[in-house]
Length: 552
Image (cartoon, rainbow, N blue to C red; front, top):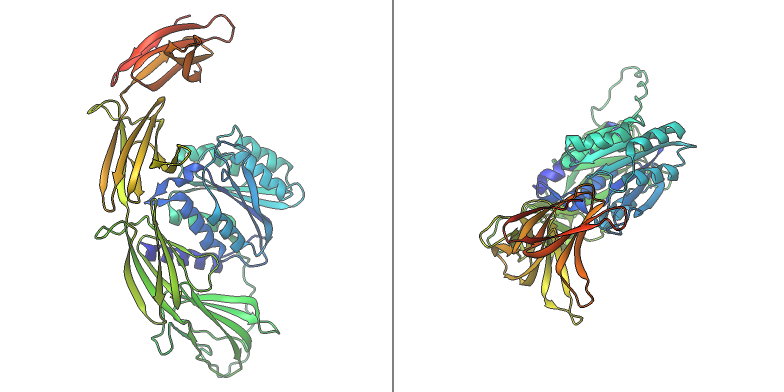
């Protein structure tokens, strides 16, 4: 799977570098960093797909282009003000944007309308041409109106465009935010997987390059070499030439011998006829690269050999000994000289500079790190055993009864051992029935929450285990109707020593349905006028539905 992902990335990079050139106006990319980005597509978290797609496409950005990066929902869970311009628009920002995306936490809400407005203002959209590219996997959750904002920005901007990428949205959801792009003359693109997201970024962050100038009229016919530059690249001294998956970057050399303008980027078995002059040639394969200065003289042919001093690492991440390869495993390889190590997923094959490779593999909550020596020209093929067990969690109203499968279902995994202050460390969480966890061997407590019912259940896991943890709620469903009510509240039936009842929950409106622990309750019908509240008692039995109407 990792090999396919790298091939797709190489194809997208080639497309963006040979077909597109970045637009002259400033651009700010806005990334949705809300908690929903932890959801998976094809076993891979959407947040990791977004990070890798940005890394891939931004590799092709010329250093002089001014690209900025904004995120929302990455610092606070419940805040609609959690919007930050992390990388202001500037030249050569690709590595800064990639590093910023890699460091984001994904946990908050989706104030996408306010984020687009702030990005437009940061670009001085009323004075200069400006483009915003929004990548979101959800709809507005902070009361903003993206359709109205699109009209406002288009009317007051000099030349403002908003492109919107709906990552994993349904067609109906996409229609609700496509108006932001439509009202500014931008594009709305539906991206359902990793390849589609990369293609969407090429279409939105990049723009068609100008037509090349007509070639000058040929000089009078004279004898000319078909190719005067025929380089080869090898992993190690004396090794076989690499002809597949490698890349060649050709630059004009500046007077001090450093890289000047990029002439071309080619792949595989490269042959060319270069004009006489000084060049800097960069040969790449995977994460390894080497650079040479070449002087081309008229009538001469050059066949330089580029030695990468690299090897090939093939990794098979497994949850436990003998288990199948975990396709969703994150594999981070810190090779010699790298500042921002690349991340692969599932079975991984990578060409890397020779030396000690620090490999960190994460499967769920299990993490293992190994240092693997890799010599130039060698292939190291090995399993990485993380040592986790797999848990599927569900909640049931009663023992052997119906499974809770509606909304409002959540699970938290806590360490069983309490800290000195009596609390337990939270390990991870998930929502919905059949929630899945990969956990390191230990004793845990699973906290199941279904609406107003909260139950704890201890369990233990060993490496290689596959467990179904079933939590019995001892609860039923309470359906409440209070015609004309301002709000509906559920109270415990028993009063405390001060004569007060404990409130279990409140909902605005005149209908409400909740899962509650079996027992006796009081349902209160609140009115906007004081003194007109009314209450009724109700008993909820485990595994059964109770319906109550509190009349005026």
